[in-house]
Structure formats: structure tokens, C-alpha cells
Image (spheres, rainbow, N blue to C red):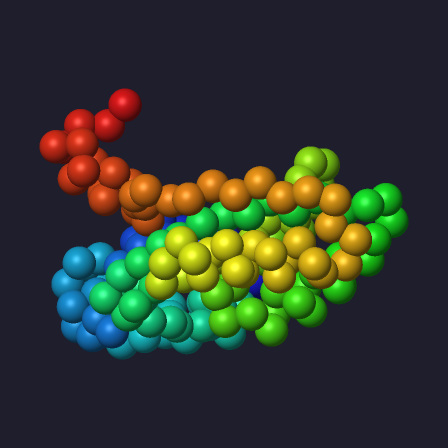
Length: 159
């Protein structure tokens, strides 16, 4: 249970870390008008409370050889145990994440692959797992990860 409510400065710190987790305490401190030690205490608290669950690297998958992203919706028969799909997807290097959903579809799988042929192979492996009754795949043409990315892409305008 968090010690206290997350305030606006905490949200600013989280946003700055999400943009670049390698920022120095001094850089963050200058941007949120606190001392580096105060920023360090806040980050330590956010980590301790589980608000910051970890740090990661953002990979440009097109430069790393997997430029195609897709989302495959999976529908399964009746009372099929979704653990089967999780196990199959977890063993596939193309799978980035599996989201179990309420309603239709039963699960959503995020894939990253080097080419369309590999996408087809990955989808076929998913179809053969468990009691899959259907799939629908959407290929990503472009993605935006932050509101500022959307603003930049639209020439400074959002709709």
C-alpha cells in the first residue's frame, strides 16, 4: 500500500523517467524544481511502493531485424484453459506480450517479426495451440508511444 498519494511532481518524475530512464538525478531535479537528493528520495519511494516496477530498454525493432508488428486476436472454444495459449505464446520469440481480455476476443497477442512469411508462421503456431476457433490479425503501419509523439507527427496539432 502506498505511503501517500502520488502528487504532480511524482507524475512529472515518472514522465521524465519514461522518456529516458537514464536521466541523472540532477537533470530531473532541474526539470521539477527540486534538489537531486529530494528527487532520489521520491524515486526510491516510488520503487519501494511498486509504482516504478522496473526499468527497460526501448528497442527500435526495425533496426534490430524485426520491423513488422502485428496484433492477433485469438478466440478459443468454450471453457478452454488460456494457460495453453500463454504457454505456446511464451515459447515463441516473435511474441512480445499476451493480453487476456474480457469478451471477444479471448486474448490479444502482440507479435514482432522480420517479414510477412514469419508472421504467417507465427499465426499458424498460435492457431494450432489449444482449442483456437479463430484469429484475426492486424498489422501495424505506424505507432505512437506518447502524446508528444502524436503531436509531433501531426505537425504540432492534435485532434
